[in-house]
Image (tube, helix red, strand yellow):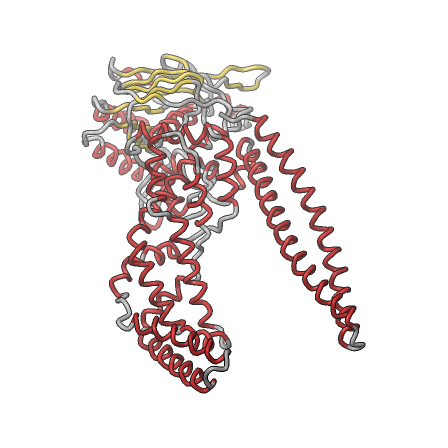
Length: 585
C-alpha cells in the first residue's frame, strides 16, 4: 500500500514550496521595515513641517504597510502548512522505521486493569501497536481506537472495506494527516463540556422579551441615524442607550447562572472545524464511508461549529471593560448573545454526539489504515467461518522489518508449542495474537495472506507478583487461566494464548495442573496455543497438534532460525546456556 515514490515526490515538492515562501517572507520583512521608516518620515514631514507631500507619503506608506502585513501573514500561514506537511512525511518515515517508539501517544491511559490481552500482546502502552499507528488528537477518537482493539468490530466486513478504501487514497491520507498535525490534543473533560451543551439546552429558555430587544436595538439605530443627520437632539439617543445598557446589565445578572457554564465553553478547542470541513468535502468511493460522511453534512457540522465559535468570540468580549458597556448600550450584547446561543442549541446541540462519533470514526479509520504504510508486507485478512487461522509469511508487526522472521502456518484446535529458551515461542504466539487483533479491528495483517475466523482473543502471558494484594505470580496465573475458562463458556469463538503454563510451581504439580487446564480448554469454540517446556504435555491427547522451535550450534555459539516446525521439540539448551554463562563447567 505504501508508495515510496509518492512520499518522495511530496517531500521534494513541499520542500521547494516551503523554501520559496521563506524567501518571500524574508522579503516581506525587509519591505515592512522600509515601509515603517517611510511612515515615520511621512509623519514627521506632514506633522512637524506641515508638508502635504509628507502627509501623502504617510497615508500611502500606511496603506502599503497594512497590505504587506496581510500578505506576509498569508505567507507565514503557507510556511506553517508546508512545515506541517514535512513533519507528516518525517513521521511516516519514523513509523516505517524504528523511531516510532519515541511517539508521544501510547494509549497507556486506556489500559483497563482487568484486560490482560492489551498488555500481553503490546496492543497498548509503550512500544505498542497503538503507539505506532495512532494519529488522533481528540480524546474520543483516541479512546475509540483503543476500544476497537479490544473487541470484534461491528459490521467488520464494511469497516474493513472502509479502512482499505482510505488506505488506498494516499493523497487523502497525506492531507488528513496534515490537518491532524495542526490539531491540539484534547482531554476528556473538554469534550464532555461540549457534549453537555445538549444537557444544558433544557435550562436555556428562550428570551421572553426577544422581540422587545430586537425592536429596542432597531430604535437605537434609527435614533443614531437621526442624530447624525441633526434631525433630533443627541440627548434622546443618550437616554435610549442608557436605558438599553441598564436593561442589558439586568438581563445579564438574571442569566448569570446560565453564563457560568457558557463561559467554560470559551476555553474549548473548536479546531475540529478543519476536520469536519475536510471530511464533508472529501470525494469518497466507499458506500459505508459516504453514509458516514452524510452524518456530518446534514446538517453541516463545520458550519455549525463556526457559528458556535463566533458566538463564543462575542461572549469573550464581555471581559473587555471598554467594549462591554458600549456593545450593551448599542446592541444589548448580553441579551443578543444569549438569544444566539439558545437558537444554536435548539438547531444543533442534538447532533453534537453524532458529529463527534462520526469524526472519531474517520480518525480511527485513518489510524488503522496506517498499518499498510508502516509495513512493506501486509494483506487484507479473509474472514471465514472455519475455526482456524491460516497464514503465509506472517510476521510480528512491531519487530523491525529488517530483523523480523516470518512463518507460514495453519492452526486449529489445541496446539502445544515447545522449544528451547529464546527460540521464539512467545514471539510467535504474540505474532498470531496481534495479527488476529488487527484482523478483528478491520486492519491489514502483517502477512502475505491471513485467513481467520472471528475470534475473541484471551491470554495469560505477562503475569507479575501483586505485592499490595499478597498475590504471587503463580496464583495470578491461576486466576488468569480460571478467568479464561469462565470466558470460553460463552457462545463465541476464542483464540486462547497461554505462555509457559503454570511455570511458577514444581514440575509434578505443574504437569498435573496443566493437563487438566488443557483438557478444559479443548472445546469446539476454542483455538488454543500453549507454550511449555514439559514434553509430557505433548502427548496427553491425539487431538493436540504439536509445534516447536529449535536451535543449532556453531563454534560453541547458539543460533536460532525462529522457524516453526511440526512436532514436539527434541532438544534443550538450558545446560548449554548456563555453561556459556559460566554458571556450570
